[in-house]
Length: 327
Image (cartoon, rainbow, N blue to C red; front, side, top):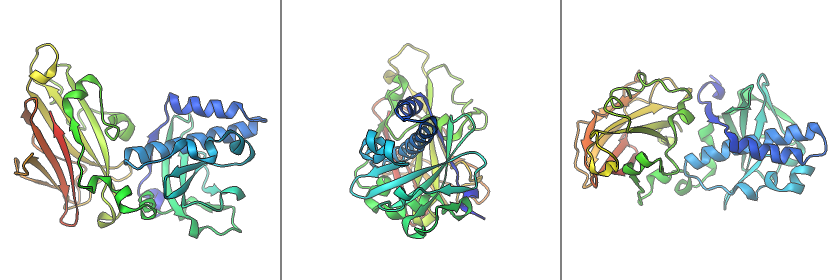
């Protein structure tokens, strides 16, 4: 099986991405160069968004692709990772089966990500990754089938940067602020991860039946080398039980927690253990363990009051990832 069949991460390209791409494109001297610049900009922006979700620092405006003169002179789509190097984000149009590498991007890159666009350019798929050492200077293109899974990118990034979820300092996710549409950067809308949302598929209908005060967000979690460089999605949905008027901080909140495979993988890795823990680390529910044919797992719905904290822990014996929440 080629890497393009394993994990093709979908990224939504919104108005901001297209506005920047249009601005850069109109600066060019020919329509052909403008189109190339437009696609390069969207490719960089898609990878930038993915790394932002993964909590990996980038310097979007430091690359040649964001420099007016350099993007006018060269065919570049580079994204700078501070203190690491440049990542080239090469655009791939629908129907294309190979990635083209102009001479100016053959050096000074830590690697290359293939970014394939939908027909309407409203969505991009990150098809995979290849390291610099695998590209011959005599070759201008490589087939998409030669790509490695996207998570091979993290071999080029120090563990402390690539796996921030494993660090000792934990960010407390404030769920009560979600009712006010205030979200931590790594928690994104479900549509941006899964595309269209079916409440029944995600079992969200049960939690949204109390009143209109409900919200759900998702976070992409990289499981690292121990689980074949796979990523999963942690989904958290909350609903205010009381039918009173905001602020909801005074109301009791119901919480639903699920773990899903990334788009492109039908099932979760087996033997993942999801736990609900108190702030002190006490087990509050019977752990849920994924099987080889589980397309998602979830904890039993639970309730809490404003000010209470809890932890969601995902592990498999070789690693542990913990997310801390406060209501």
